[in-house]
Length: 121
Image 1 (spheres, rainbow, N blue to C red):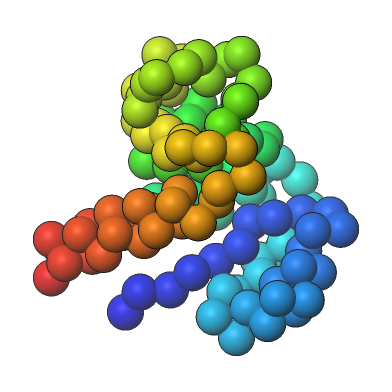
Image 2: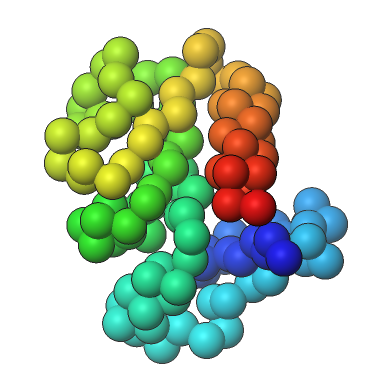
């Protein structure tokens, strides 16, 4: 069975409820006391999908499969015109094709996740 979990901390946790996603995505933040808890949880995930956050960097540093959603004009560390990261070999980068266009990024990740799930069945 495929399940989605949120590792988000802080004020953004409320967005699951705001966008009506709390029935589809389980919030795990209530179980996190420190970074060790986040590390332990990351290691239990098949893939971590994130925007450019500390969780993405932590997951990449752990060499865990990590997919990062990047804006059209990303931070310098992500470079340009790459689908990978020299800093984190287990990481894939999904970039906006134009500023503000997250829809295509989400659709591409959705297609890729479906392929991963189907390949494991």
